[in-house]
Image (cartoon, rainbow, N blue to C red):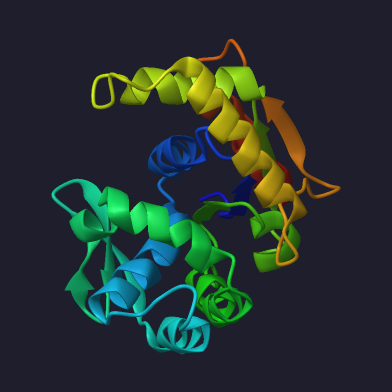
Length: 229
């Protein structure tokens, strides 16, 4: 049996990291660790506790430090469990997603989730995605991927995904939001988005999701074979 790897996938918003990481993990038989869901879980619990991202940053950070996080398979899907409760559906609510952006920028939240994320990757055979996995969370990962695409391509994909639910939303608005998010993510003080020096960059313009997954799986299998040699 080949030695399993720890794989870090980073990249900007809208690059398809979650779908890609999930697909790569399934193909390789690895565990997929969705760090975005972890920040969403903090946001959900903060909302349930009536905490404000403006007034209660210390309390939200402490809440993040008390979470017991697991990822389990439920009917062929991977769900996030926090303190034993399945929160998968709840963390995907739009209002939770909106709050999670502010929550993920809080230094104490990131500090307290850092060890949890590292614990989840203690055993090889993990695919973890985010914006600072290869640079901060798992700097020693066996394989680092920086998955990106042009802002226009990422905005086009997001527009196609959301236009039915939001018919009044224009492509230009989605692109403007994309550029604003890119600027915020790359310039924030805590764990800014950047490519690790030893990461393999994949620009996915013109590529399907399956093509991106195929490429990463091929790189990973070559790494596994190299480790076994």
